[in-house]
Image 1 (tube, rainbow, N blue to C red):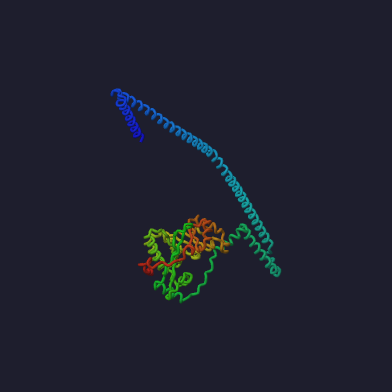
Image 2: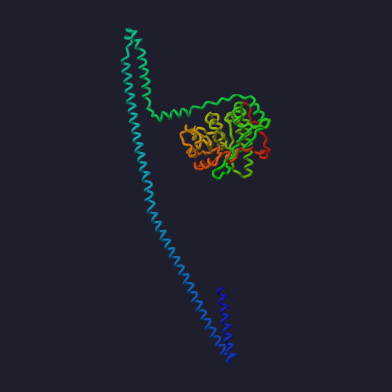
Length: 475
């Protein structure tokens, strides 16, 4: 742009000089040589003046740019100086603040160490006193034995011996009982209470009486044979996004008249009559169909599948069951077998061996319907349990039976997380409950608030007939 402007100015100067020469020749009748000389001189003079003006403008522009650059450099110098000052302050303040924060911790550790030392000395003193008391009781028993009448004296006065023997026997028994009690370490009231609670924990609950119902058993058998076993799914969502992370597979039986049997109605009778393995077989087969359908849609949603302990113990059914899941172990990360806490509490070595066989294939387990927070969840984690379901009313202290627990429900999730178990709160039915769960840092929830159990459409299970009973020939 500047170059074009210079060319146009030079062209204008040349035109002016030529005009001057023409005026001198035709208007003033001057010789042509003189006119050309004057025109050339005027042109050079104007070019020189233009050159000087242009240089002056360029110098001014360069000076202004240099001034702006110097101002910017000065601002940068100020910023660098401030940054150096802050870094120096941080270098001096961080060690001081660190010492101020660590010194109280060291003081508390020293106090705790002194308290532990005092406790150990008190326990040693108590053990010494108990040993001295036991020695004194032994001396007392020895003196009582020396004061007892000899056999000769008893023969000489049989009536007196008969009159004295009961009192002597009672005294010796009391002394022996007291000595045996004193030889044991003295227990504090808190320890006594803990032992009592432990005995209550270990004591199995009395099984609920179930009266046989032949009509219901026949209805269950007919529903299984006719394929009237429906599969329902209920989502388990993440909080607070409410994105579906898992599904729980639930079974319903349909009677011949179209009425639906809920699990609470047929589970006990089906378990009593040995029909639970067949129901679990259908549930497992259709659950795998659901997982395959989800896999085709690139959805990584897991599926909780409820199992009965009788399925794990059935020697005719479980080997085929194990072979079937081994053939589909690619879904081991997505299929979770679920058991109630009451069933887990009474499992024997046979069920644990079956669980170990499933765990070796990569399958994980879940415990639901938790009513006792004092269960050994570390042992469950060692056996492959990675999920635990707790009723929302129990976690939010809406029920009084948690007074028996030795942990606050709000800390239950942290306890499970320590053992690698994820807490899922079910039966969530209100937005206020969701807010409370978020405050407790609960990440998964299930309930009618998000969605009730919905039946699986027929097109999803299309091409999935009822599987044949997985049995092996009895040896």
